Length: 119
Image 1 (tube, rainbow, N blue to C red):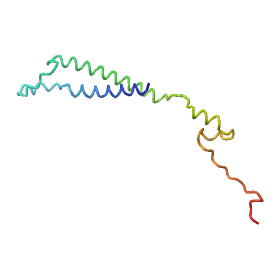
Image 2: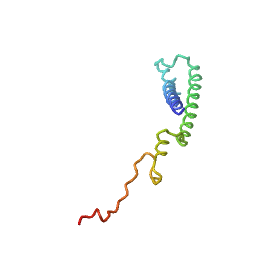
Image 3: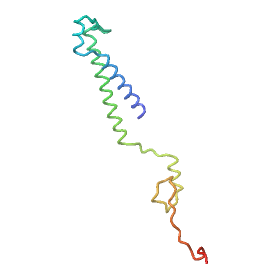
Image 4: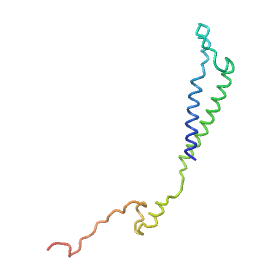
């Protein structure tokens, strides 16, 4: 589920970037007055701002919603259990409560006995 939201989030971000770059600013019409002739667009002069601004608003809303969803996912990690973790917890020695499952227990120092000391 998190991967799907992440993919939608990246696509929404790319859509916002693309739409913002395609829109012309308020000062773009001033350039047309000096002979550049680039003020016409695929959707017409007035239609482009309506369609582009609505599409940008939709993509921004999707981006905002997926941002909140990903923030929720990161603050509430899944508590699913792993077969490996369950197996390691079941086979761990009873006196090994201080260490995590799956990690080797720390070795405790062993006191030498009288027979281990050289004479």
